Amino acid sequence: MKPKVLLATTCRWFPTARLGMALAKAGCWVEAVCPTGHPLGRPGAVHQTHAYSGLAPLSSFAAAIAAAQPDVIVPGDDLATWHLQSLYRQEQGSARQASAKQDPAKKGTISALIERSLGAAESFPIVYSRSGFMELAHAEGIRAPQAEVIRNAEHLKTWVSRTGFPTVLKANGTSGGDGVRIVRSMKEAEAAFQTLQAPPLLARAAKRALVDQDKTLLWPSLLRRRSVVSAQAFVAGHEATSTICCWKGTVLAGLHFEVVNKASSAGHATVVRLIENTEMAAAAEKITRKLGLSGFYGFDFMIEAGSGNAYIIEVNPRATQVGHLSLGPGRDLSAALYAALSGKAAKPAPKVTENDTIALFPQEWIRDPQSLYLRSAYHDVPWEEPELVRLCVRNRNKQSAWYSRDSRKQKLSAASTTEPITAPAKNHLAVLD
Image (spheres, rainbow, N blue to C red):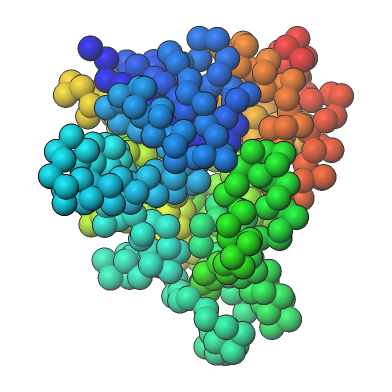
């Protein structure tokens, strides 16, 4: 019997569909809980989809788990991970009540599945706290920039007097460049701190609930709940990223890239280059072992200019946008997960390219339809799934909004050009448009 994977996602992110394809190709039975209109919902994408409701997220996740009966759950975005952690806490509370009433039939089977999927429950608060994660890195002897939680404006001034400018401010519970500011003056720092800490605007929360059917921001807005903001010392250099598949504290497969191009200064990568970096690999292994992690995780680094030292700066507690790539033995995350679930030896899919530089689709195309990387790099278009490509091309404006909430007008304008790609890729995509 095939191991069953439930992909859990709250947004219509294209890489989650790519990951579903990779998991199915590796030998898994794949189902998904996702919003309507997600690329996973197209015919033949996965064996079955279950409805995600932003108005009742935990209930919709619990219903999908009950219906699918998966062996493991793979979150495709940060909010999905947060929902799973919240569902775990809810189920643990129900289990304690059942235990008090001596009702063995209600003792937390969902919470056991979530812990099996994500790793030890003790890791949950750490992977969601930017400052807590940095403290762990320092404690484990991993190279990381100085960081601490900023309590108020006076504390911010004290931090700046010690570390100087530029400095980095980050809000907990954000991703994809949202909630990150690099500031170069006290005026910028104070304004960024105020913005990052502020509760969500009520108008934005109401629009999200009424139009997008997602009440995630509603209670934080009504309760005027402020975000936790931490400061991080600035590391001059270039960015790098690792994504891993791990099981019970052991890394099974990993991909390490330097970031070649990005959607924006604080946004997601659009072009990456495969590298070997022992310091990055060792850091990922140490954290995975310490926290007892399972599933897919990503780690962000800064490679310091001059020294080449790798400073860890972030953890992403979910599958990242490069998780579907198969680049040879030890570099196929889906095959590694299949092996862990089935007890069989991993059989990586054929290496998709010998080109170390990879232009991610549709990310780099959305960023710049005339990008030279669409020709010089390996352009990761899933030509074997023409309906998926067609769906993405036809919805390129929406894809732009899904990929980045920053500078949205600029990116929508770039994505809606009538000549989306230069030759040779242009001819292929024009046929599907």
